[in-house]
Length: 224
Figure 1 (cartoon, rainbow, N blue to C red):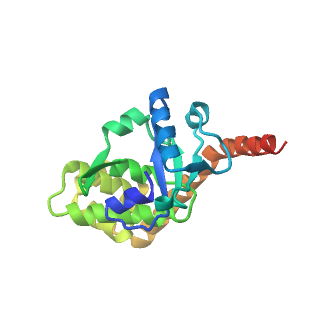
Figure 2 (cartoon, rainbow, N blue to C red):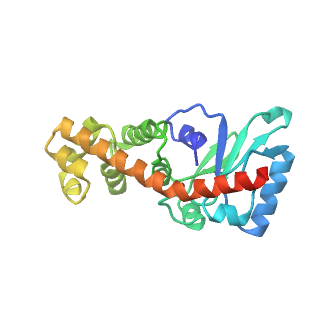
């Protein structure tokens, strides 16, 4: 669900860690703990790996010590801000095959939503992910692809191009940046996109604020 998934979608990013979305069920967590033990993965800071912590939205962090993956960090979560349940995300997943192995990732649309955080590095990645989708599908796009681009494109010139190429679909969206794109106003589109990013960053800070307070309480309790 992180940088490795972005690589599969062609928005190359060198990532030193592995972000995984996991299903919180006893059997699944037992399998997960066995895999972590095989990798000699040790917990990093707080919180502990537990169903309660995962269900509350916390990320749980591990660092691998086995020689062939030494130093690899694994971050685990079971839910993401603004996204549906694991079960629904699993139904919508994209599966890539690499060297005979099947790799399940978040669907592109869900990956883009998951990247709408307060972190600076995520916003250029969103732009690359959606741009890459447009460049690879623009010759004969499905209606769903056009709707996705109108909803998520962050390159002003491309958003203008898609809006003016598909004006009926563009007029059906309530996104302010698309309204500006229909008028061909690059500066206005840019400002609308900046406003969108600012609003999403604010929502992400609000989402994490109570979880960060809980983490600080856990840290204090551990030091006692």
